[in-house]
Image 1 (cartoon, chains in turn purple, blue):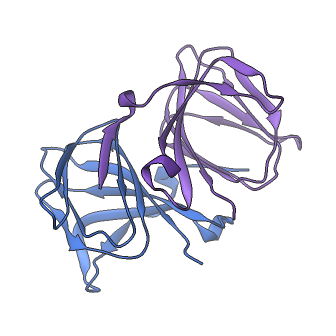
Image 2 (cartoon, helix red, strand yellow):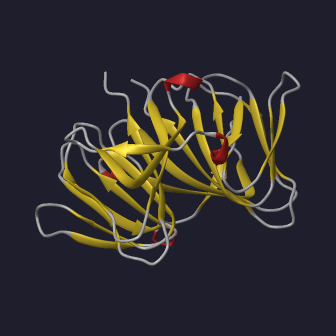
Length: 117
Length: 117
């Protein structure tokens, strides 16, 4: 059994699909292979106001739970969802998605991904 | 992309390892095979004060994030952890574990498990 607080985990600037660092978007890998997780990873993501993760896709599905703030999720098929604390989002494998902070505070959520085998 | 609030998901009384229902311990399966999740499931668990999930184990590892309340996690090897909002816990496959609400409010956390193949 391993227990920590998220603040004990180093915050990293997120890296976008094109390899550039995303200024103002931070990720903490809370539970991953480094602590022995074999099937999926738990990350905590924080996006500053007016910033977004641009449309991108990948094989890993996302299981997301909103901790605080207000965000807009959308894909490339005119699907748009406004999210707040207590909402959860499932993004299937390979679906294009963008995540934008549309509130005045940081948008904070957990985002879990599988280790594909 | 699927988005919902946790309140839209029906709350069920948890079922303990011996098959009995655990009065005062509630589980919501937020993201699971019913919405297409292929690798792991996200559940939201709520435990009323003074109640606990007794020591048990199973092949599925747990990835847990505490949303609110105060809890005590322990195993059968004298490991004890007190948890509060913002803490996370990793419980490896087959490790015995118990989760107890030691606060005055409900203990609420996300608990994710893999679909073992």
